[in-house]
Length: 103
Image (tube, rainbow, N blue to C red; front, side):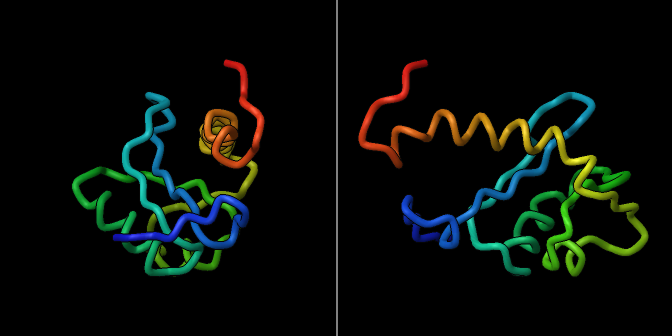
């Protein structure tokens, strides 16, 4: 899957990640927009995993992709993924800013 990454705009490309909350590890990831085909791509990568529940925000693509029999909870339960998103933003900041980020 290809994706045009435009650092100046959040609309062009997003990183979708699947996280095992118990082990605090990223299981799979996909680059794409916030539409259903990107969600389906990530879901296909997860076919060999046992999925007991899904924590997601109110993204329409997620609602269409996740089977109804798998419990889905609210954005209040997405703190593990949001923590990884914060790390991504920090370490990739040097790509979108002219100055350097100190680590």
